[in-house]
Length: 263
Image (tube, one colour):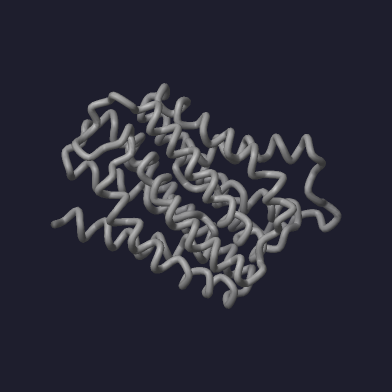
């Protein structure tokens, strides 16, 4: 019963944040699942990778809901989507195999440090060079691969990497959020597949598919799908600077919590 309540509440929060910030919800799902799975007597060495894989799987459903709402508002930059989607998918697929070979503590600390750096950038008064634009095809390919690998390793759906990168290249905040939400679907599908294959045959827990814990997926996904459109509506009513600060503040809190747990 405690797990049902915890996962349902997590789904509500993650759904709103996914729609509002284009992050897929993984930034709160992963650390929360670490706590939930610990209480369920999961093998300690499998908790972080199961949380990451399960988070990615829930983002499949969340991203569909958020992307539909963003597409209806004609907010997605389809040029960026077409350039990034293929390499984001490749990077996300590879991440499952990389994560399976990393020690749990190294993976958790790596995710936390990455989120901390991004949060400080988003909270700073830094403003991108107004003349800067998205790089050419080679540069864009590299950025997509980088985003896919890091997002898949952290189980965060891509927004925490792709939104700051797009803002760096002067893509408006709301447009970056919308495009990230849409890219989240292929990233999550292929990333989840990587974790299923790399964890195939592992005795994680009953009702697990590879490293994906299906009961948690079902409970969280129901609420994220229902609440993501609410977050999308909020993202278009909140000023871009405020949205940016919300994004950075959330990442800072999560990074701090994960570092505290790791040490």
